[in-house]
Amino acid sequence: MDIDVLEKSRLFQGLTAKELSLCLDSLDAKEKKYRKEDLILHAGDTTDKIGMVLSGSVTIESNDVWGNRTVLSHVGKSQYFAETYALLGEVLLVDVRANEDCRILFCNIRTLLDDCKKSSPWKEKLLKNILIISSQKNLVLSGRSFHTSPKSCRGRLLSYLNAIALQTGSKEFDIPFNRQQLADYLNLERTNLSKELSHMKDEGLIEYRKSHFKLIREH
Amino acid sequence: MDIDVLEKSRLFQGLTAKELSLCLDSLDAKEKKYRKEDLILHAGDTTDKIGMVLSGSVTIESNDVWGNRTVLSHVGKSQYFAETYALLGEVLLVDVRANEDCRILFCNIRTLLDDCKKSSPWKEKLLKNILIISSQKNLVLSGRSFHTSPKSCRGRLLSYLNAIALQTGSKEFDIPFNRQQLADYLNLERTNLSKELSHMKDEGLIEYRKSHFKLIREH
DNA sequence: ATCAAAATGTGGTTTAAACAACATACATAT
DNA sequence: ATATGTATGTTGTTTAAACCACATTTTGAT
Image 1 (cartoon, rainbow over the protein chains, first blue to last red):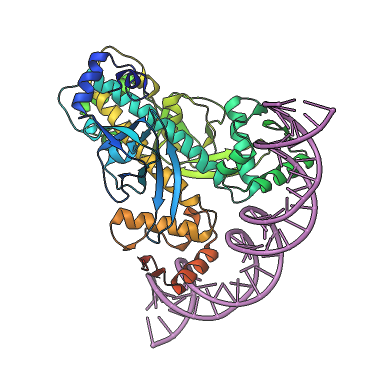
Image 2 (cartoon, rainbow over the protein chains, first blue to last red; image 1 turned 120 degrees about the horizontal axis):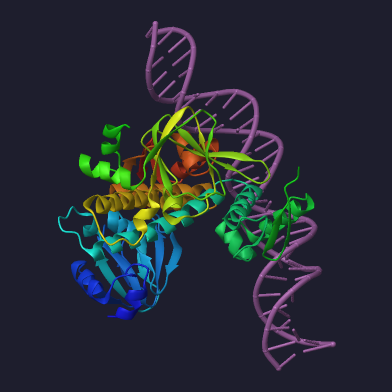
């Protein structure tokens, strides 16, 4: 197994080599190989295991009752999937499929939440690491949910730009998206986004050039 | 302080009375009182403390640079706010305001993630509890993000209904919303939702009456 | 059973987003 | 400097959601 990769991963970081070994053993860590297009996890199932992509990549898909398929996200090397489902034992709402030939490390993290007399240093470290992973995902999700709640193009832009201003602590900043990416992030169509941005510029709400923005608070 | 409430709360549950006492001490737990309309936390600040509502309620609001206010959610008795921001030390993107006179318990949970030689039983239990809280929120958020991603009314309905079918393991189920609530959840307008549901019924995709639905997979 | 109130559904109009086709600006390689 | 490709912006058309007014159904109280 790719011990060096694991030591640097967000899941296992901070563990000594010895702790890592104990931990992998205790979590019943198993590596599995998949061929491109293989179904790795199936919607409707439950799982106790977090999946970590050791090589290759997987896609998270939704396939509904009426036969519509939507690709929701890609998970690449040293990233995770199914961590929330595994912890809570909830039914998977998505399929996980091999996007290319890949190797996946499965670790049973559900047992981490069990009552257990003896505590160990690796356990506490691992709990912290998972908590950080979960919280970060939370932040990303709530941000997006927040910015896509307004129904109008302008509302979403205002929400997003305002958040970045708060995060950077400045009314002037660069955003990490180009127009297409921003449109995708806000669930908008690119040309409408451009349209709305120029209107907002015309009205003196903002100034921008490429990905550099300046918010103008009138008084 | 309301020890009996705390013992039953999701944050502290499973801790013995003695552990709880140690824990509150170690987390520097402090109760504060607020008057209706008081600003409790301010967007742009950072905090190390999770807030637990002991009595009354608070609102989570967004107030942007241009003066628009949006109420995002209510947090009632024995519910939490700011837990993710506190853990990660991230800048708050929202204001928290007293919706009525209230008492809030603040606990410094950021220190939980610090490296620390000595581990204690309460610490591990607390980490588990917070991880569960965080994961559950994650599940809620990712579900909503998922169902509001499609741009069309029908797309959102299909996504939502399909998810419930997976969760319940059946093509026939009751949903926990009335029409208005479902519309709010999916970021749609109620009458459009009704319209779309009837169309879907006409096309033989679904059957429903009130909050009872049946999905029909054609073949 | 009758009435009032709430929830749900329907039709028509308005509005704004999606879409399409194209123009302009910008970056890069030759 | 020119050509090529990519990112961004503009204009016009189509489409569907929001909105409004009201009809129908359901619920619950008397």
